[in-house]
Image: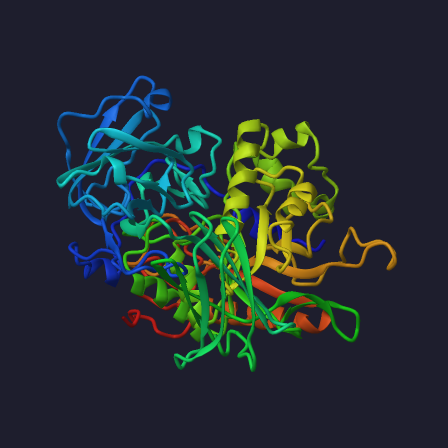
Length: 622
């Protein structure tokens, strides 16, 4: 039997429980300057100089509510406040200064006063939120300016007409149902444990103001076409009829191509030729700058020339290719959690340190797992040269343990025989709520539209281990219509329907091997997809003094000694590397860092111990 039952039984998780986590901090959290929190421009692909960060100390209040779900858009503001909260850290995090869990029957309030002057007649003032979890109503000077639902994507609102000279009050009311709802929430749970992590609520990414021209560039999406050596800028403007100039700038600061046009509609595609192009790759992550001007508006962006896809080698094996050359993908699973900031990195340098560690350790890819990260993280992946497999955020109800874990672990044949196109399967997978299915598809669309101009992103991952899975073939086809330049994994782990460009398997308890695509028919009907080991490993090793839960270790195969653990991990990686010759296109090792009860990271949760590279007590370089 090709299954290690002993490891399966040893890895069975305990029931999630309410318990305190041991306090852990990162070096970046320890040195945090509360007057300058995440002060870098939050949107590197559309920068203007006329912006100001609103990160820092806000007032907050948490209030019980008999109907929080119904009242968050209309309830009256509190008359007193509980204290200060450091934005953008959620109240559940240590860095927020609050350290309190928001519950589904509570409302979270924020308030900050800002000195402002009304804009000139030709200009507008935009208020940006990079992410607020989950529902929020935004007020300026007592006037509601917008409502928003969704915990992972940025939004903005025009506050020009409600701003007055002098002090202005910005107030938010937030409601977050966490796992009591079916909304998209990733791996957050109030009752955390095992592979489920502490839930967080409210503002968890940067808040900022931006003064813009009324006649302006609303969005700019760079598209570099490698094979034709052409650059396309898809530009949306607030109103047509102005002069639009696009310039492409090389790393030395020279303008290598430019084009000018007058948009007749609000959206226009501007094409230009770029000669002697420099290709982007993890070895040489070459970025071109972009300068765009429209009327009196000017923005900065960047792009890269590279092409990714699944192509066949001389033996007919499907391979992942970068710039039409096979590239063996060595990836690491990245949950994007921090002990002091939860889903919010304590600093920009912390984001960079994770990426640089992965590169130094010999990997070339990060799989961002069931989370949309800050836009600066993708920018750093672009400029440092790391590929990204981007997951869609999961939600819905939790599927049953037998459906989501036990059956696919014990019975490999189950990976490809269960249909996901009917309501019975949707209920089993936690996708029975029609409102969830609508939200999932709309958020997946917005995620692709938000991130598809980042050259680092090389594959989209649609569903993971059946959670919230429904109609994966249809959904994959719909999402592909938004981005035909990248391959898709329709189902990562199991319950594969034959969709997408990869047969993506999770293997924690079986011998390492390349499995035949179960949905491949005769050559003239359906060619085999590329085979990727999309999760494996998860070997655990707790490091005393650097764990959140000292009495619990969760993962797959445990070691008490770092040297023995390192030896086992290295042997496992070498074993998987050897499968390239048999048709493996790459792998995703679980995982980048420990997270709460999971001690299966290459780094400890606090990033102070590098388990993988023989630095038993080294701290990350700042």
